[in-house]
Amino acid sequence: MFKIAGEDWLTSQEVVDNIGGDFSLKRLEYLRSIKLVPPPMKVGHGDGTKGYYPPYVVELIRHSERDHKVGKKSYPDIIIARGDEIETIEIKYKRDQKSYLTEREIRKQLGRSLISGKQPEEIIKQAGATKLTLEDITKEMNELKQQLKSLFSDSEDMSMVKLSRIKQKISKIENLEAKKDSLNQVSHYIRALGGQVAGARLARRE
Image (cartoon, rainbow, N blue to C red; front, side, top):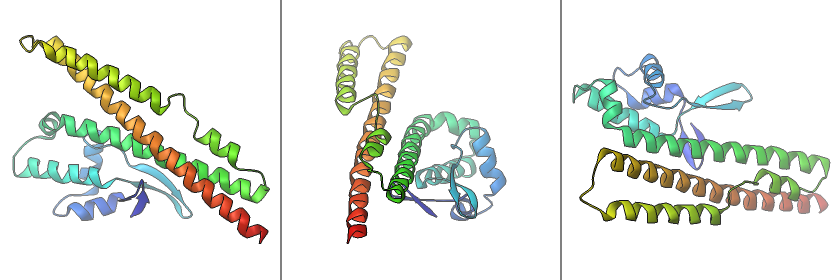
């Protein structure tokens, strides 16, 4: 296991062992190929690169295997039935992946700053830079919620076109919430790592 975004992520073999039964690496590879689960996130170690899956993907696999065996459902049918769950997991997965990569880059740059003696403040600022601010995201989310209220106001009109528009706006709100969470996590990493660098510099002076 490997800690990412505060959770224990599993290698492919650990996923197989966790699911148990006749579940295999070949089955896991098939589920990836049909996009029921996302590909593992690649992480470099001293002994090479390994791929990891988050625990919520493991839960999705467990539920899907139960539907396949007990419910006698095909995997394409499971993808359709669990479409919303799969979409939510994809958003969370991308958010966690981005947060991990951002944290890794900040740590790398701050490590270099300690060796070189350069001040880390600008490095932290650049690593946490983003075009969207929390204020921008909150404003856009509120506007989308108002638009949703307008769409729901006419309860008699539930045409497919209207339902599609409602689903699109809900999806946009979920994406914005993921971005907001990601920005909050990046801010947390910046504060925490900035404090670590300050402490390391103080220790070196002493």
